[in-house]
Amino acid sequence: MGQIYLVRHGQASFGSANYDQLSTLGYEQARLLGQWYANSRQSFQRVVVGGMARHRQTADTCLAELPKPQLADAEWITDEGFAEFDHHEVLRRHCPEAVDAAAFQQLLARHEEPQRALEHLFRAAMQRWMSGWHDDEYTETWPEFRRRCVAALERLDTDSSKQATIVFTSGGVIATLMQHLLGLQDYQVMELSWSLANCAVTKLLQRPGQFTLSYLNNYAHLEWLGQAGAVTYR
Image 1: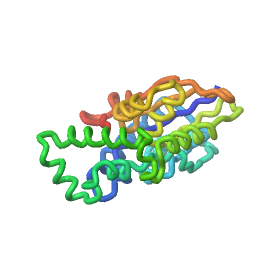
Image 2 (image 1 turned 30 degrees about the vertical axis):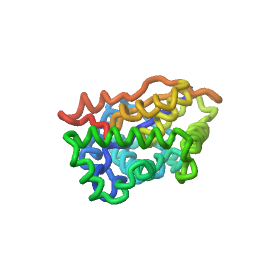
Image 3 (image 1 turned 90 degrees about the horizontal axis):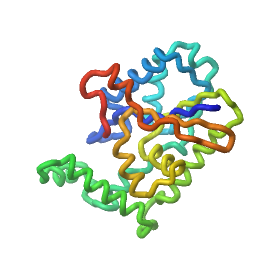
């Protein structure tokens, strides 16, 4: 039985000019995951990176902690099917102020709880995207994104009964794959994506033509090895 480990990237640089970069804490989270795998002697025969800078940074930092035998002859693949949807576009279509970072920060600052205000805005933006009523306004529609994620997972379908694959990707991708495997509703995908911790791991078991969930959103490595505040969700 094959094993597929879906890793959400470490904390990115939210609020900066370039979100697609790990924060200092994001790099530390990736190191902690690598140390966990090194200690548990988990080896990987295939490494898949979702094509975004934060995915590659998480992969490089995490796997640098593993002794060479645990990655001996591992195949490295970049598969943009595991890239996240364009959350900037999704937010801008709902909230035009988000086009200008300074104006958007001012908008959030008017609220007593800016973080909560951001969550409400983003949920509404996701609902708009998922509704299908405005598909002509998006570069990638929600059904297209969903099909892309499922197709990427299906490319990992192999005949190997022992191969372990680690995939570095994003929360929206993982939540969408859970919808595919568990039959979730669209609103549940949105809620699940908010609950996935940075550098948390979701494990799938794989037989040819079949994927089964083993566990979801495991971040014990951050709780066990990390300092206070090591677990983040944004």
